[in-house]
Structures are given as structure tokens and as C-alpha cells.
Image (cartoon, rainbow, N blue to C red; front, side, top):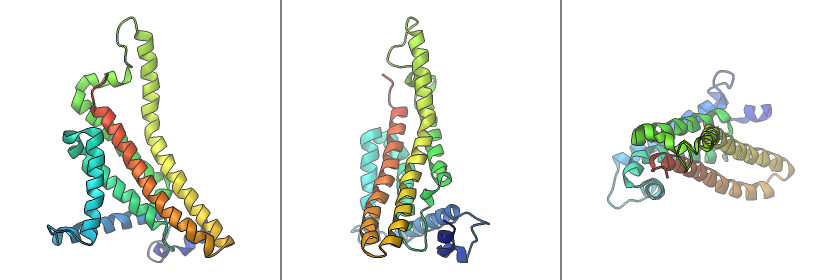
Amino acid sequence: MEALHEALLIDVLVKPEVIPHNVTHAFLVSIILILIAFAIRSSLSLVPKGVQNFIEVITEAMLKLVEENIGHHWGRTLFPLICTIFMFILLCNLMGLIPGFTAATANVNTNAAMAVPVFLATHYYGIRVHGIKYINHFLGPVRSIAALPLMILMFIVEFIGHIARPLTLTVRLFGNMTAKHILLLVLAVLAPWIIPTAILALGVLVSVVQALVFALLSTLYLAGAVEEAH
């Protein structure tokens, strides 16, 4: 992996000993997204074309996904969070396919920096919507004095499940992006042109799917928090 680090273009400006690669590439992706947003804002058109049309397709698809799972009111509230996460992960993943760059999402720290806020937002909005009754989401379908042992067991199971959510979000994205990166490196050595080209096309698909999976799971977690417990 050291040889790979020396090949990254960002090392010309920032040494990895000073700022890790995942941080520099995450900042680079953030800057690109901000510049795209300002460019589109300065040239908004009723008939979208070019980059504006592409971004509108993504945002409309994400808005539909969020509203269908969370509902119109809270969907509109949580849409900026979900859509931003999706676009950030997607661009990070695709950047990892460009020679001389790496995917910031191939690092657990970057993924945890997104998974933990989703975890905190889930319970923040759960408490905001339901108040103290949010505890009902952890007690199972039967709530009575006679079912107290079952309620305690369900609470423990649900508590562990919720704690594991940010871990699974982090590790799933990290594992897929790292595996894709290593596979491309190995195949590039064995067959410099033929096989890596096919895997590169597959890498684009994996990049889109993993960004969508992270966004979809985040949406479902938030939807479960704001819905009524049954």
C-alpha cells in the first residue's frame, strides 16, 4: 500500500504524514460539491440542461425515495441530510476509480463520520416527534406488567441493534470500497488493460449501489424513528 500512497496526486501538495489521504480527498469532494452548487445556482434555468439537469435528476430521485419512506412532512425536513450524504459518498466512490486518486470512503474514519451523525439524528428526531413515548420503539409489541420480562428482553435486543447500526453502515461501505480498490490493483498488475477495464465498469456500478444503500438504510432508520410505534 505504500507504493500506492506515493502514486497519489494529492501527495504533491499535502503529505499523508501531515493530513491523511481520506481527509484530503473528503475535503476535495466537499469543495467540488460546493462549487457545483454555486455554479448551478448562478445559472438556474426553467428548462434544465447540462449539469443542472443531471443534479435535478439525482435530487428528485432522492426526494421521492425519502418521501415514500418517511412521509411528506418529515421527508422534506430530512431530505437535505440524506441527499447530501448520497452525493458525497457517490462522488467519493467515483473519485477512487480515477488513477492518482483514492476513495475517501475506503477509510473507516470517513464512513464513521457519516454513520454517527445519522445515528444521532435518528434518535434526536425520534425523541422530537414522540417525546418520552419514543421508548415504546424499544419495548416490543406487547406492553403490560405481565409482559415485563419480554419487554426487558426486547429493550436489550433493540438497544444492541441500534448501537450496531453505525458500525454496520461504516463497515459495509468500507469493505466494499476497499475490496474494489484492491481488486483493481491486483488485476492491473496481472492484466494491465483488458480485465481492469471490465472491473472499472463494474466499479462504477458498485460505487452507485453502495452510495444508494447507505442513503436508503439511513432513510429507513430515520423513518422508523419518526413513525408511530405499534
